[in-house]
Length: 398
Image (cartoon, rainbow, N blue to C red):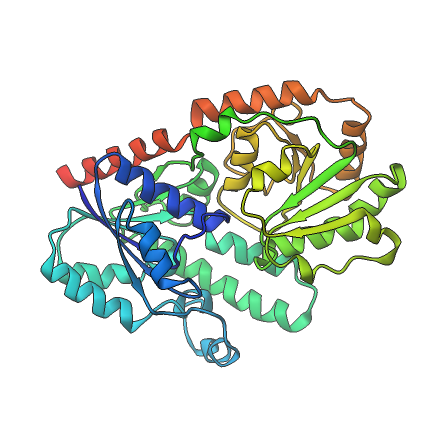
C-alpha cells in the first residue's frame, strides 16, 4: 500500500507516549512492505536530523510549523466554536502541501494521527476520493474534562470548562466524518460511541518492540521507586505533584531510606519540600532508559488526567517492571490488580499498597512473569501493525 500519514509532530526521539504511538505505527507498517509518506509539523524538532532518521523507513515531509500556545490565540479562541488545542493546529502550510501532494501522487489511503489534524479531512476529500482514517490515540475531551475537574485556579477552571464544552461538540461530530476511527482501547470506543453512535470505529492497541521482552530485572536497590515521564506534559506534572504532596511523605515516614528517582524532561520544575529533599533524585532525560531503571524496585504512575493508553506502562511491563498506577493510567491495558501490577486511586490506597509491596505482601517475580506473558500475547508492534494493515485493506477494497 501507498500510505500518506499526517502527524501533528515529529515522533523523535520516540521517548514519550505521543511520539511512541506514532513512531511505532510508521516504522512497523513500513517493515511490512508498505510505502509511507510521512508529513509532520516540525515544532521544535531538528528538521535535518529528523529527516535523516525517518528516511530509514519512510519518506518524510517536515513542515516548518510551530504549534506552541500563545496568550493572544487563547483569548481569540473565545469567539470560536473549535477548541483552542485544535484550532492552533490548523495551518495553511499543511493545506498547501496536501493540495500539491495529492495532485501529483497516487495514494491508497490517508492515516491521520490525533484529533488535532482531523480538520484536514475536508481538504483531502476536495482533492481525492480515497479512504481517510483517524487514529484516536486518546479521547481529547476526556483529557480536558479531567483537567477541568482537577483545576483549582478559578480563571483556569472557567476557561477549561468552556474548552471542555467545545470538545463535547467538536470531537463526536468530526470523528463521524471519517471512513474509520481507530481507537486505542475498548474504553475509549465506548466513550465516543455514547456521544455519537454513528462513528465507524475499530479498536487497535499500541505495541512494544520484542527486544524489551528479553530484558530481565537486575538486582534491585532496596526501597527504590521511580517516576518516568516528561513533566512538560501537564497530566504527568499534575500526577507527580499529587504524589509528592499527599503520598510520598507517608512512604518516607514508613522507610526513611526510600529513594524516588525522577526520569524525563522537566524535572527541574519539580518543587521538593526540604523535609524529604534527600529522598528525591532528579535524573532528567537519559538516552538508555532501561539500563537506568532495571535495578529499581517499583515504578509509580500517578496520573489523574488522561485518556488513551500509556505506552510507557506497556513497555515497563514488557521489561518486567513492577508498577503501581491509577486506574486512569492503566486504561485500555488488560491488567489485573495484584496479578500484573498494582492499581490504586486514592491517597490511602497508594500509601497502603506501596508499604505492603515493600513488606513483601506481593510477589514481585510472579507479577513480572505475568506482565511479560500478557505483553507477548497482545502488545507487540508486529501484531499491532498487522491489525492496521487489515483494516486498511478492508477499506480500500470497498
